Image (cartoon, rainbow, N blue to C red; front, side):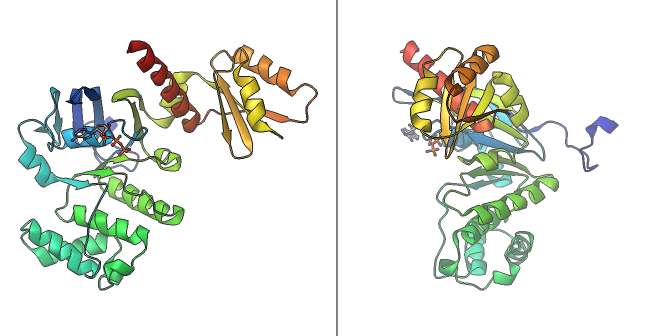
Length: 323
Ligand SMILES: Nc1ncnc2c1ncn2[C@@H]1O[C@H](COP(=O)(O)OP(=O)(O)OP(=O)(O)O)[C@@H](O)[C@H]1O
C-alpha cells in the first residue's frame, strides 16, 4: 500500500468502495422513482443523501442494500452484488429505517437483547454489552425506553443496528424530530464510528447535518443532480450570493426576482439572499434596488441551502418541460 492510501488520521483506507452502484432505476407503476442513480461511498466516509420528500432516497437505499431489486442498473455493497447477494449484504449492513420500533416498557438492554434474539445472534450478551458501551448507553442500560428523550431513542436505534458490528450503516433520516443538541451528539457519534472505518450513508433534510458529511448527493424527482463534497457542489453551480438586511424583505424579494441577473431569492428569517450566475448583472440589480433605501447589502459565500434550492427549482422546470 502506498502512502497515498492513508487517511488524515494515518489509518489505512480499504481499497474499493463500501457502495458502488451504477445507473439504478426503479419505477412504481408509471412513476419513475429512481432514475439512473450512480453513486460511490468510500470506506470510512460519511455520505449524506439529500432531497425533498418523495424524491427517491429510501427507494435508492433499499436497492443498495439488496432489499429491493432495481428494474435496471447494477452495483456492489461491501463488495457483494446488490442483485445476487442480498443475504450477505443484510448480514453485513446496519440499516436504520425511518420507523425504528422498540418496546416502551422494556429497558434499553432488554430492547437490544430482543433484537439480538430475533437475529439469532451468537454471544448475545457480549454483543449487547459491546453495543451499549460503544454508543455510550451503558450507564442507562436499565432505563425504561418509554421514558427516554428522542435523542436517546435514536441512539438506541443506532445501537440496535450496530449489534452485529456492520462495516456499513444505512441511516434513513435518523434524526427526524430530534432536538438540535441531541442531533449534534448523534453526529459526533457518527464521526467516531467513521473514524473507526465504518462507512455511513445517511439521508437527512437538515442543512447543518449535510455540512458535516464528507460527501453529499442531492436527488430530486429520482435524479441525482449533484454529488461531491459540499465545497464541490457549491462551486459546481457558480452562483454568487448577496445578503440583504432591511425592512419589507418579501416585497423586495418579489421585485428582485423580476430583475435581470437575479436567478433566485430566498428569505432566511431577517435576511434575504439573492443569487445568480451572471455576477455583474446580479451586482447591478442589488445596487439598483438599494438606491435610496436603508438596506444593508453584502456579498456572502453561497451556502449549500442556496444551491439545493437552486437545483430543485431548475429540475422542476426541466421536469415540466419534458412532460
Ligand atoms: N412500494 C411502493 N409502491 C409505490 N410507490 C412507492 C413505493 N415506495 C415508494 N413509492 C413512491 O416513490 C416515491 C419515492 O419515495 P421514497 O420513499 O423513496 O422517497 P424519499 O426521498 O425517501 O422521501 P422522504 O424524504 O419523504 O422519506 C414516492 O412518490 C413514493 O410515494
